[in-house]
Amino acid sequence: MSLVQPAAAPEAISPLREAWIVYRRNRPAMFGTLLLAVIVAFVLYGTFLYAGDPYEIVWAPQTPPGTEASVPLGTDYLGRDMLRGLLKGGGPTLSVGAAAAIITLLIGVSLGGIAGYFGGWLDDLLMRVTEFFQVLPALLFAMVVITLFSPSPITTAIAIGVVLWPQTARLTRAEFLKIRELEYVTAARSIGARNGRIMWRVILPNALPPLIVSATLTVGVAVLFQAGLSFLGLDDPNTMSWGLMIGTNRQYVLDAWWPVTLPGVAIFLTVFAVSLVGDGLNDAFNPKLRER
Image (cartoon, rainbow, N blue to C red; front, side):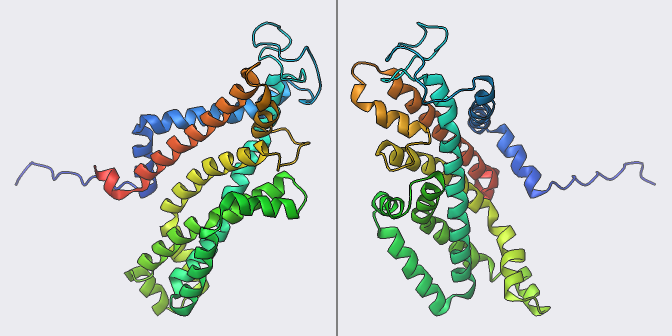
């Protein structure tokens, strides 16, 4: 009788846990996550620790950073506190970016999923609609939408979401076309599951990883888009944002660099952090990259 014990079978790891392990080992992705968390905490809690009206004139115009304790980051061309503006302006910038990404995901997944699942003439029709929106000048179309309605963070988020959804729709369609022919989808059809249940309860959960990556990267694009619209004066002027701070101070940049540079750095760091997170998610959810 052999005394050698059989080797224990390796413990199965769920795909989600495996993705988290890969993501956690990705140093740039973890740095991006930490940086994004710091920015969000800075915006959320900074307004309580440093409360006040960002439009209030508190000191002499164009006071350099570090020269006056009451305005540590200096003032803009009107004498408004730059730190208070950065804190108050971060909320609308980040919230519009996140809301636009959600709108993009809802429109893109809905239309792309229907096109990829049913195919045929419906697929052709929805793809022609997608191509129509894809060839439109995005910034110009968003400007028209905001001009037709009153400028507000909600209007800006809708305008950005409406112009960014085609890429998500195409990605969703490709995933649905690939998954709809797999065995477990055929098995769901054979037991009488309805199309709606198959699409949203069977196929969509398996198509989510690339869509999550796409939505994450869309947040960064939407933040840049919102900053551009605010810079052009098309967003609500009564709502402080980083783009608005750059736009209102741009003509004085040769006299005072900080009112333009500081919000510009805030936008850059936010988009940079979101990009690192998106790349990390792509590596974590991509089986080929995970094996490598």
